[in-house]
Image 1 (spheres, helix red, strand yellow):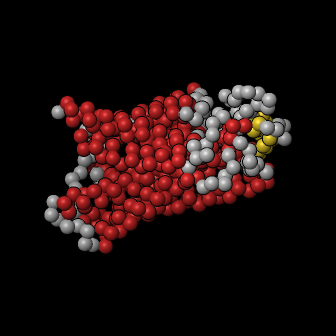
Image 2: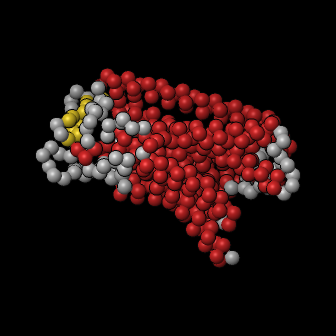
Length: 372
């Protein structure tokens, strides 16, 4: 019993650490790719490939092992270890500044996610295809999913609008990285032999942020460009979390079908089962697309908590509505879930207050890209 518990705890912690480290490595690859000459596609970067593989593996295998060996009230708080690890990795791998608001925001998000996961978790047995079909056709779930899909669509349209605004602002300001600027010169003072730890950022009276990239190169970006970049990344992180929750719901349904099939009750002879598999693939790819965009535009100190919050809350609500479990919640559970949501909202607000004028290549030292 003790060995089973220790294995479950180890798998949960390892999954959380690997998940955060994978996203941090992908973010670092994005930063280096943006700072260096973007001639080679990002997907060929070995650091990005390693981060992606670590992210995918840590998001699937360790959580599955942990949930099979640990009760939810033990596994849920351990999953929040990834938020703390994310802050540490951002500080020491990305050399990001870690302000007091970041620490408070991370703490509030961790506490809120634990409340939501602990008091909102309700176990359910594997369901047959016929039972899943009845759940999908329930008017309450049809209405919920319609509103949910509309919300995601609105956010996607809004993100596309901010993306175009960012592209126009970048073109107008001429703030694209000049070609052939070596990564080692990024953030390096002219004529100095060492790399400055802080970005050389100055704000001029005309509303431009002037950034020295070394070697006599100076880039200017407007406040409008900075805001559009941040909002686009912020929305991409939220969209990624919302899509991820549906991926988890489809995976949960698919695993139930697989378990029943393994025990002799064939479930994959109906179009609905194929639709679940196709939906799982589509939502997984969409989640990867938006998480990559969020990592390119925003700091992991913002992206990871946002994804975690939006995914946890939407997964909880989707599961409660889909499996018709809202009536099973006690008043105490509802109160604690509400308290957790408030803590999550406060934490996200604190994290979103961080100014990231040109977060990216400015925070890198003089290191060469892994694929060079």
